[in-house]
Image (cartoon, rainbow, N blue to C red; front, side, top):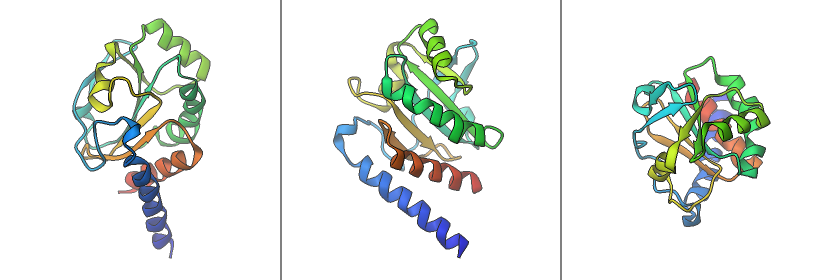
Length: 174
């Protein structure tokens, strides 16, 4: 019965996300089920991380910026309900600060109290691999252990956020 409930929750998450994913106004260039485009990001401490090197982990990419009020609202939820719970598992979470200098990104970190790593997306080049240039943030991209996109969000609402958490939880159980 427990397994059946887990499958139902996962399917509901997929249905909720699927309904949201199909809306063209979300501005994504990528789709669920596709392999995530590879890129290299520079973390705030200067360390470089290549997305393809994270295979074997469940990955969450969070596109953000200091000027984004919705991002500021969402980030503490990501910190407390996703990062703190999963950071010691086969899970990787990277915030990608869109086209801002390191000082602005640091102010965002300080204001939101997050501890997950932030990369600088100079020029918004990484963002533009995943979404249309003029489409907004906040948005999250969840990848399975093989690097395939399994969930996409846009903006922040509690129903979609809960569905995203369930998808992450279920993928980490595999």
